[in-house]
Amino acid sequence: MRKADGGSIINLSSMAGVVGLGVATAYQATKGAIRVMTKTVAIQYAKENVKCTPASRAGCLSVRSRYGAILWENGKKLYKVTAPP
Image: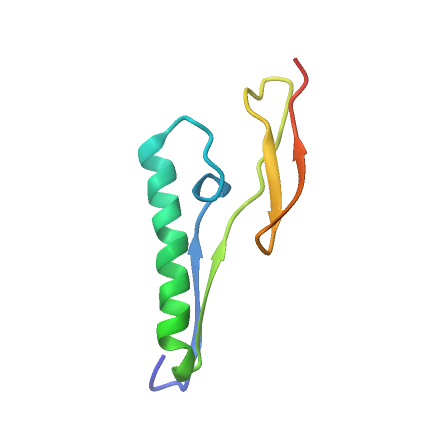
């Protein structure tokens, strides 16, 4: 990327790395680490025109869902969705 005068890195993360669900501790910790690493790389290589962004897929709530989800955008809570009982 340095030779090409820049580029983009996309790291796959998860909402589990942002919002604790109380389950899957190792998975959530790993996804949280990916988000922090992504921010660090973005800051570290910004001067070299290298962009680094996280990509997270949104969850899907169904009747079988056990947990609600809080939807975030740019660090702000938009709303909380809960599954029906």
